[in-house]
Every structure is written in C-alpha cells, then in structure tokens.
Length: 365
Image 1: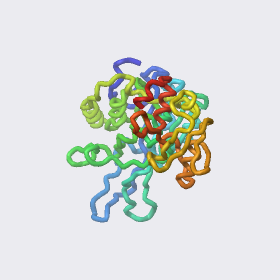
Image 2 (image 1 turned 135 degrees about the vertical axis):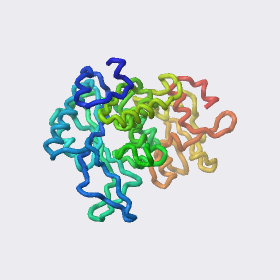
Image 3 (image 1 turned 90 degrees about the vertical axis):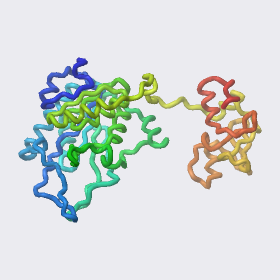
Image 4 (image 1 turned 180 degrees about the vertical axis):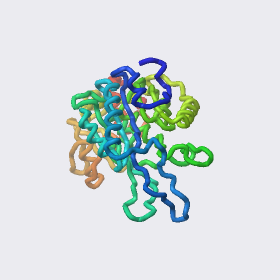
C-alpha cells in the first residue's frame, strides 16, 4: 500500500479510486453507502418545521436496477482489495440492506452476522402511517466461507461488562457536540455516531490494520481509526465533505502510547481449576472462604477443592449459587479468602497467581 493513500481522504468516485488501489491491501471495509431513500414529498413535524431528509444527488437512483448495478460494482471492488482474512461491514435500512445482502452472497462473501443498531432516540414517524423506524442493520461478512477473519471476542465481552456481546446494539444517534453543523444545519444528513464505529473497529481489526471507507462522508471511520491506532483510507466524492473530514481528523491528536497498549486480548486465558490453588499451597484444606466478603457467610475448603457449608457441598460456583438462592454464580469473583494481614481478598487474584506461575505474589494479592 502506498503511503500516499494511507491515512488520507481521497476525493473522487469510489469505483474509480478503488481501481487504483492494490489488490489484497485492505484489512477491513466499513461502508455506509447511499440508502436510496429519497422522500417522495416534503415531511413536516407537528410544529410545522421541515424534516431535513436525504435529498442530495448522491442518493438518487433511477430504480432498483441502477441501484443494484451500483452496489454490485462497489462490492466487487472491495472484494478485490480485501486480504484473504479481511472483513466487510455495510450499514443500511430496509430501503436497501436486503438487496445489499443478496448481492454480497452472490459475489461470494460469507455473512457472519447481521447487527441491529437500535437507536435510543429515533426520529418519530410524523405521519403516523407506519411504525417508527428505530433501527438500522449492519451486515458483517468475511471474504469467503473459509476465511480466518478477525474477531476480538474478549474485547467485546470486556466492553459489555464481562458478558458476551449480542447482535442488538443500543446506541444513540449522533447528536450534540458530535453532530457536525454548518450555518446551523447538519453538515451531513446521515452522520454516524463514533460509538458505533468504535465497536465495529475494536471487534474486527487490530492496531496497524488498514480500514477502507469508500463512502467517507464527514470522516467518522477515519476519526475512530486514528484514535484506535488503525490506518485508514477514505474515499469521498463531495468536496464539502472532504474538507470537513480532513479538518475533523487533523484535529485529533491521540495520546502517545506504546503499541501493546492498543492491543486487545484475542485468546481466552488458560483455565485454572480451583483445586490448583490447593496444590500450589495458596489455600489450605479446612481454610475458610467468605461469600461476597461477608464474614458471617463462611465455607470450609475440602481437600478435593469442593466447599462445604451447613451440610451442603459443591464447587465454588455451585456453593455460591446455593447461597444466592439458585441464581447463577461465578465463584471466582464471589468468594474471598483472608490474606496474611487479615484482609479479605477475592480468590480470583489467586487464580491469576497460578496463571503467572509466581506463588510469591500471594502476599501482595
């Protein structure tokens, strides 16, 4: 990849510019193409203010055939540019996303997920003739069925409070100071929130990867990529958007951090049976553990790693669930031990000691 293209906004037609980029040079494509959703008539709110819909030339197509030909052309161009282990995200609404999905499959892409971006603050349906459109759909696809695509599963769990990330993402629209305006009006009718791109890029790229956005708009993809230490290429036809995107991204000065700080956990940490803590001498048979740090709820550690409390025996998880009235329980974060100074510490700290193979650290755990 030429340095002239990396981290740059390239002005022009996306189909023409993509032809000049080298094959298999892109790690991820994020595409927010025209939705083909022209309003057939002007729309007004109850207070008689006009709704600013998409009425620009870049979203005008003479029917489905022209839109399908356009979609097939840019998706084919992206497929040539993607590395074999690359991925593609495309976002749309009911106006276009189902046609896009069919063409993706026709071209050999393999759909991995469709994700609902559920808008916390959608625009109402002012005419009251249909349901309020409160979501958009993202399709995530690999280049082919057997591709070894990037998915940072554990980063997504961490971002979601330790729970597996679902395919329904509740995120607000782009509003407030994030919404770029010119002369008091929205600079772009369909500017996406940075939170949406943050999740997409963190999930499916690594630091140093190259992200292509063939419909760059006001540069949200480039802004988030720069903050996360990814390279980016933006293609945008409209001169006014190019100017906005360049100024927006140039103003971002990400903190200078070591490359390893930007990396995320890719592999699941090795499993550690609770009994390993006894074998390593970090806990002793007969020692008391305290449920949720409550000194009145104690269980005795048995030599085989089970816990016993009031005649009930089970694993750290089963015993915790028993005390929690049957609710699921991760015993590693609910049982506490007493350290050498009499302070209660969560037993998960001892599991980390075993993983690191450094039993001397138990005094500091």
